[in-house]
Amino acid sequence: MFLKFLVLLVIVSMHGYGALASDPDPIQDFCIPNPRFGAIRTAHLNILPCKNASEATTDDFVFSGLKAAGNFSETGLATIPVNPSVFPGINTLGMSFVRADLKVGGINPPHYHPRATEIAYVVQGSVYSGFVDSSNRVFAKVIEQGEVMVFPRGLVHFMMNVGEKPATIYANLNSQNPGLQKIPTAIFGSGINEELLEKAFGLSSKQIGTMRRRFDPKTVR
Ligand SMILES: *[C@@H]1O[C@H](CO)[C@@H](O)[C@H](O)[C@H]1NC(C)=O
Ligand SMILES: *[C@@H]1O[C@H](CO)[C@@H](O)[C@H](O)[C@H]1NC(C)=O
Image 1 (cartoon, rainbow, N blue to C red):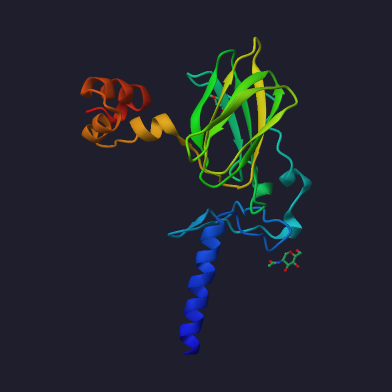
Image 2: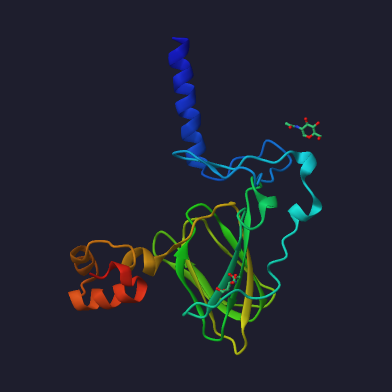
């Protein structure tokens, strides 16, 4: 009887954890991953063992890699994600950060983060910025230097530099591992069955081939 109750309690608490779906609360002030151990990979968790707190230094809590833009993609976007793999000090703190730069006319294609709400601050530039809610309503406008926009967790969002100068955006995400799914790549670059894509989008085999070559040449037979 007691055992049944215990099992039920565990199931209920696991379910609650899944439904909240935000990062778990830390149980220590901080947890700087110990470089002597890699990640312990289990079926569901990536646990990074902490180094002894007495060995933590101020530099563990400082990241200096955001002073300049990263490398630009074909769409004119450069991002530097700041997560525990480059900034061990934020491990277990429930957040991460990204610097994004957009060339004039550059875009951040529609994408979403399954595990984080994002708040993006325009450091410089004019950026057409928005998201789509689950009823397919678009919320978008041009935001300027000094303004922020929030992208609710799991919703598709996008940006385009519509100004005459390069744009820089800093963004906070409320997970240390927000995840990133780019819509074009998820659809056309992932190896989904071609016939299914033709039917889903009403496109010919040739048109699907064009999209696949653009987003992942590996998936083109
Ligand atoms: C952490 O370091 C302190 C000081 O060196 C030491 O006293 C303590 O035993 C260490 N803790 C662990 C778990 O190794
Ligand atoms: C940009 O690319 C160079 C060369 O591949 C690489 O060394 C550098 O780390 C990259 N910068 C960033 C911020 O990813």
